[in-house]
Length: 367
Ligand code: SMG
Ligand code: MG
Image (cartoon, rainbow, N blue to C red; front, side, top):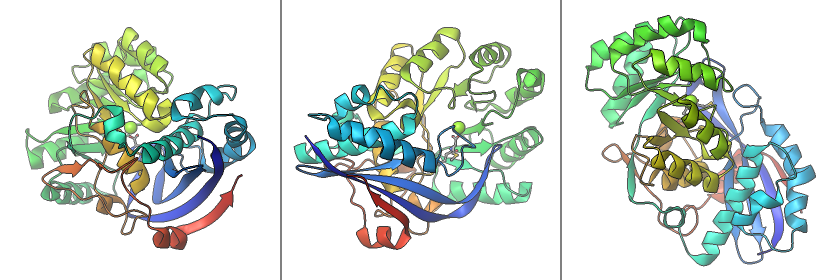
């Protein structure tokens, strides 16, 4: 397969609900979309970068620059490109996992569309629909939080994840438990807002029977997470720390977590994500698929990944309506707490050119 052109689009999608974490707040997703045109097909990917380097070191204009100046010229110069070779071809560039992941994903999509194979089939999916949860940002008040959670449960979401930070942790979790009962599948995500000095405070969360506590400490604090895991009954799940299959292996060896949130974008793509899945399965560690407020293009591929066997916990893959009033693909809908895994070739969903053009704020063609 030979690459003929790579198109980068920046699209702006207003969020239906503002999303605040301990690190950042956003009321729109400004997405970087990659379209790869090959000799026989085209492929799409949603590069999961945010606009600012406030969640991950990578950010939108940095990803555009590294693709334009380095990654795309390297791929175009390669005599033969397949998704399985992309990582090796791009290895001379250090880091920039999300930019590399997006290119690999778009190439994989093009390849699978040509071969008439779906992502789900290619990755080894064992289900045709996946149970999903919803991630609830830090709202203005407890009443607002309860109202939001009530609405999501009414829609059928199978688990609730609350974003927490110092000053917004025990109280909202207690309020949700009291209002919705012990059977609610509930977890919390701190996005690195604490240090190990907060261990005794975090122990107060043990009484709420959380499914897990996600990324309480800094991304590179694996030893801290290992210590914290030993002093809490609540399972520790890592997200920001899981930057590659090797990072996952290190975290498991250190006992830094007993659950893993896999973000295909951060680990370097769907092939690396499958490796993390396999590694965790071999260690008896359950995984679930994280979300980055993806457009339908990213969500389609995440659904295929989440259909693998060891994805035993509901992922942050919500229905389109939870994020956007209008998306660049047909909407994904919640049915009985599940979303169907696309079964068509490649990511299995097509981009609506009309909506895409209307929401595009920047377009560049690189080859
Ligand atoms: O896509 O539903 C979603 C968002 C899920 O909470 C979510 N993601 O740390 O897990 C996480 C956050 C990161 C998003 S910041 C852009
Ligand atoms: Mg997280």
